[in-house]
Length: 232
Image 1 (cartoon, rainbow, N blue to C red):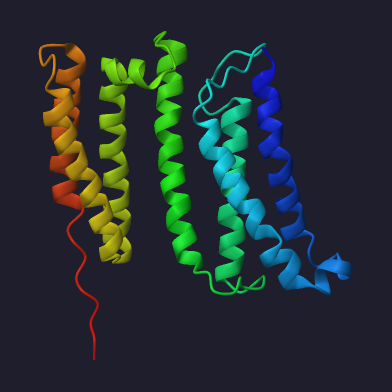
Image 2: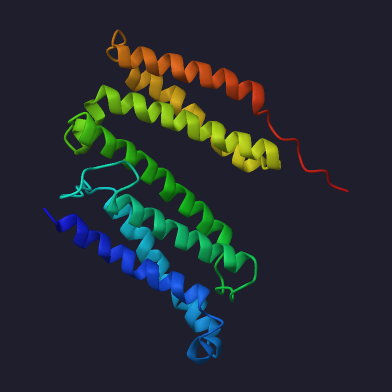
């Protein structure tokens, strides 16, 4: 029953090491300050890739925190996954701001987008874990697919995520990000008609349709497409 704790350590320890390396870099005159590219760029990159892969793999685990009770987000697995993603995000942020050396021939913006996808997958797995522990649904792909409460929950999650992306894009003027949110919203509509229309008479399906419909009206009102950048 303690296997999950062992799995958590495989991500938590490397994440702590990277975190300390980033924030103690100015105190480590040798060897970090002498070889900054090797330690802060080339050295961290494979660990960041490992942490990203570990985060994805852990999404497939049941995340049983035995002997502790399961509480969403506040449990060893979710905390470790969040910390790993924050460490990668922080490393990329330092890189983009020029605080640490850049990795040759690698675009940090691409890595940021990949991290965003990983975070979205983690959110879906978080919903699956909640359904597993609180609705007593087996933590398997087929069981989740057939679960009305899970399907309704991720439909609302996807819509809220699209709302957040499009709202942020409208505020900052990021057209590409707005289109990403719109694409996710289109996926929600497709999901509604292909999957959620099954057993349309159930309360879960009704809640799904009403929630998405209301959020789509709100999205259309408060998140218009940002204007094109002015060129001279």
